[in-house]
Image 1 (cartoon, rainbow, N blue to C red):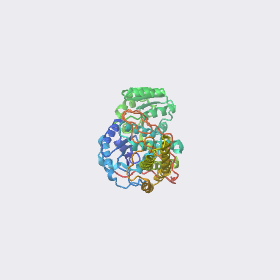
Image 2 (image 1 turned 120 degrees about the vertical axis):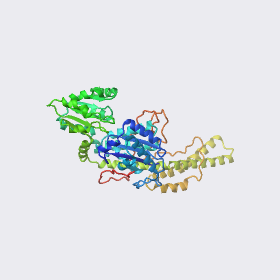
Image 3 (image 1 turned 90 degrees about the horizontal axis):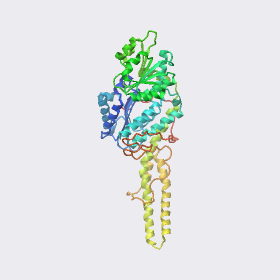
Image 4 (image 1 turned 90 degrees about the vertical axis):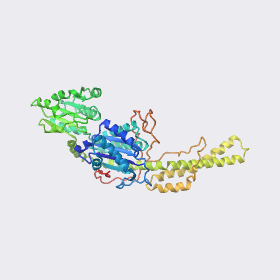
Length: 516
């Protein structure tokens, strides 16, 4: 199976262009439904943040033979339909033509798509280098897709593997330890504008993920006079209560601006919520000896009318301004260890995929050996009717043990060899030597044709399919529609292959990919 990622991010376009492709939460849900109805797409998930909009799809097309980790060619081949349909779905919701999307979007296929999501999960593609918030956003994208029934075994395994890789990067590298969140950097810039933050009055507009992070960051910075403003009052009350803040409805925003020093806005609104008309009375009535009103716009599409930047008593800090500061911060953070983890985890994922591809052969080999042993035992017992029941049972068990021991080393070795880049050749030899000429019948009850032992290092356990509706999602499989389980991160990543190499230098990640 072949995964694709079709997306646009801050890496390839400025915020002013990126906001034209932004998706609200309802938009994202609608896009998932559209993608699920496309015949060329077997699985789909959408990662939509203030820095990126990415569509991950599984086409249902077989992996190339052999399954090789190589840079994809310029043509998408049988995947062109999936790319075109995904772009059309995104364009229908954002008001952009497919041609315009093709101009700005990148497409990564197969191995390149895997490496991209792992790099994103490790925080190496974030505006704030190493930002751990991206893992929560990836997890939320997975959960939403699972609730819509658009996640299957391929994207489930890929997303879970990427989350494990991101957890490694956070705990094992300087990127994780030195990570600066976008909100934290925004507060640093705001402090420069007003001199200090402690004792200031602040508004948090929006009670979503970034709103919650803003409220927590203000609390840690010593800003205790905070009001959480939201269109729906209950989420604002819950968030405010968490930190001892006040809450208010969005209709109270004009009055609240009169006595506010700092506004952090991160809603999911399609149009600006802080406009020049809304802010004009508060700016006109602002005391002459009071500092500027600092407006921090963390949203995409933007929450604050950019025209407010021209007001002499306003300091507007938007994503473009934050991008400049974050690039300065990122230049000081060592990234070698994080890129090493990306290389190791990407190789481990592909090793696991190769091992999975050989599982049917292993099952067939063992099933065939057990069936042959059982047939020979039956023939022997037919010729020796005088044997007692206990002896007959011992003969059957002995024959099964012999068959299992004879097959043990070949099945272990074929799984190990399958993980190698040229493992398909070894697998074919094993198939020719040990594979059944015809499908073997199932072994008798009490025997097993499943390979024993672990999958070996570098494997990535994936489910055979998502559970049905109403079940509780476990890490071994994505939840079905209607479930609410959060996809837990498995405890620790699989061991990395010893053949992984660490790049000496790390140029900026490829931003273009293949143009769709």
